[in-house]
Image 1 (cartoon, rainbow, N blue to C red):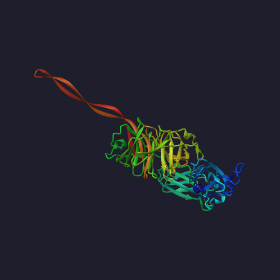
Image 2: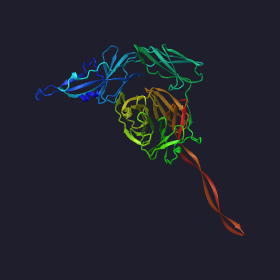
Image 3: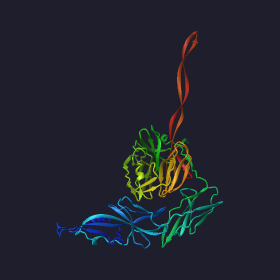
Image 4: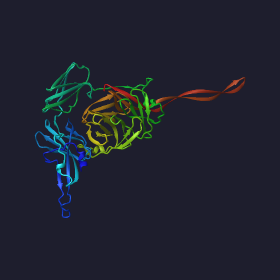
Length: 533
């Protein structure tokens, strides 16, 4: 019993509804049980779990906590003002470490508490309730004020100035406003005000700007912040610029040609990623359904290593995990719910993992996701230590912990018309890469962390935009394009001609060179650099 209790060294909470550290059910002695024999009892041990994160989402308050080993489940409690504690959720699935409270009222001040429980059977004479550790003063609670994102945003521009107004939010004591030329708000001008109006000066009159607002509440030293409002933009649609990465001969860099190997059939570029020092690109052989990985220096044609033949399905997407120094590959079509782990040094497969999807997680139903058995996108988020998976033909992002166990899910608010290629997920944003196929019209759709659509950026390049990745603050993308090219071939034909020599016919051999042109199917594997993103 002492060994079991040693696992639960986090504070044991004393809740008003519970009235004790433990709930006990004693087994009464029966006619066949001698009174002097030890009597077994069934005990539920409640352990306080520190709440490690709490934040306002667009439709409620999301709390997160640390996973406790050997736990059978979690209970989530909420206290509004001075009211008693109410149980608002229970997870028998210990993989859940997030909870979204969408029943909280706007402007309400709430406190959350999480308990882990474990049911054990102990000997009555060996253990007593008095021997349970008394750890008070560390209740692990987290308080917050639920604020809805501001609405009614209006923007007025006059020359180089822009005035932003919005509707007052319930219980807000201030507001933060951000202005940026980037739809993902990279490089912003930020102002914090107490009124519902702010003016930005010194802007460029002919440029497009994005605006977003969030509410703030500071009470007794506690700062609560709402989620961002829907972004509002002024002036026409944004279009990024793109340029092809060039090789040392100043020609477009083709990854397959740069490998300097006879990669017959490995001519379809797929997922790409970077560890900050090198880039990794997957080339697919469609007929054999096998892949090779090319390790290169970023922005150049210098190849470091080419892997052997790997069974990675279609290798639709790839991400780098700096915490464990490994590459993870989403197989895409042909292999159901499978990802592979690759050693970035040897480029050999170090493991293969099947993802088990529960019916629901953290209050989100996964029924639609379970019907889509293939993963076409994968990312790693260093700030949270999570993997983000995107199933093909499904508007949902599934988050996994470092052991590849699902912990939460987010539904995306819109479904693009273009073919979805893969995704790139950060702590705050979700980027969805889409392509119309051979035509120009590649679009990157952006969402916030709640799956709310923010906007899109057109990438002016022919072919299919397969994936995007950052090297520092530089954004690169792999591009696949199939086309027919004209090939010329010299054909030498020999023939004979008779000629009179001294009154006699003589057979003379002659040759004729014919240049023949024909069409050949070819696949390009290009890399581009995206600017103004």
